[in-house]
Image (cartoon, rainbow, N blue to C red; front, side, top):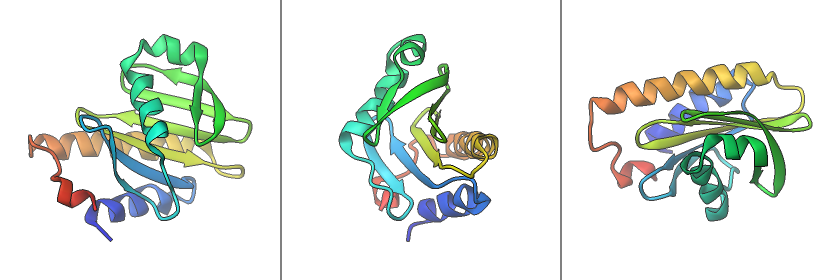
Length: 141
């Protein structure tokens, strides 16, 4: 298991209010790491990247189709996307180099998922600013 995957597991899944998590490289539009069992398909990566590439208001109006479900956006701005489908949801935080994705399911507190994901996003932004090239692709395995 990579250091990045351990970071996702400890910081997000460790809260018990994040069901699954992933880190996506923005420039390459590719999955870097994900929690075990979280299969983010290339079409899902495109959906999330496009949610930020388009006008965030458009994403808010249209919602997201992610992991074969329609989600209603409850927040969409240049740094964050929050979307829900009944009692489940997806939280996406954008840094300069990555998208940090976290999901929650029924019985979990969305607010805890949001807080943990936003905090980790800030940490990733600050830590990676010390390493301008970001994480090497070999670190994403």
